[in-house]
Length: 130
Image (cartoon, rainbow, N blue to C red; front, side):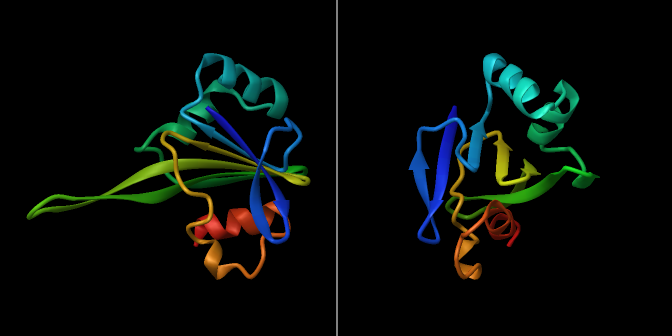
């Protein structure tokens, strides 16, 4: 599933355009993986790493892009137990665009309260890291 967002008035607004600055790929299927590879030059190993909960966090920096694999908490609490788990998230920051790859749906604005206004894709990335 692909969700796209524009940055308008300091907030994320759902968008339909394939050129939207924020793109969220949730558990991408084969055709979406092919599109990620074609549009953003991501190989299958990189895509698999972004979705692998056991993948080590890392940062890859190239002259025109930054690719980050990060761990985000996923909590579950039952009656008498509490589990703390993590899931991987892949973030590709390009000039004017952020592509996010996750295994399950997640809110993009959870950490945004620490960022004054979402004006550019980097602000969204930093909000997710917080």
